Length: 304
Image (tube, rainbow, N blue to C red):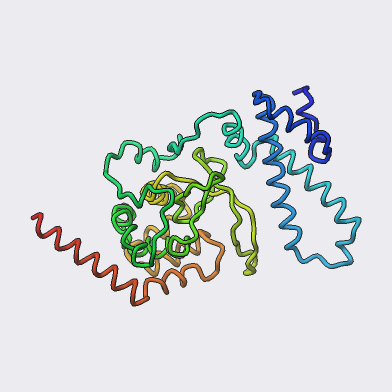
């Protein structure tokens, strides 16, 4: 690309960024593409900067001159990664800039979301309401119960395991991930958007554990249109990744399933499995789940 938008100095040239903003206002395809790449570069650069700040370099090796060259290096690395579309953020931004509809479409390479497209099962209003935020832990359990039952059956686990895991990941629905427009991403299980993910993304700040130490990082997460889509994608995510096979083999034992899930690296929190188990042992959680199971059994008997 020979136009001025391809200038490698844009990341450090403020006048270049000013020209870029002016061109972006024209909404031309070339401008949209490069603005998206530059935004992705800034995003990657912010991640690298956060990683640098979190590192334990001593003052003797982290002087002003070292930091200066590290900053230059990080900027160039960020630009190179953006040009190669390494994290997949630029195409999403480009589509937004070009005004193309980025509906919550199923990923072309995701069997889970493809199944949802053809699924005509009625979903509760809570499951598709972008403002969904359960008023209590009991409401959270009740809202997820029908969706968890379906997904749990496919995995061979108990539904309460999925609900407890979702409770941990979302703070009982109070800390749901939201996209750039403020819409609910319905990401119940903290699944990130890798290079193979073709659906929508939500870029947010998150806590990760590195060598047992909690650190705040910026990451892109998968975004869904409903709670059921999130559940279905979780099922596919586990089934399509060989590293989770040992966990699925222990699906009948909730504790073993969670331990194997953690050993496979599902989460960086060293106490991930124990935290989910603790939620399942709580009196309120156990009572609500028990009531829901009894209600389901009664309904099944009436339908016989």
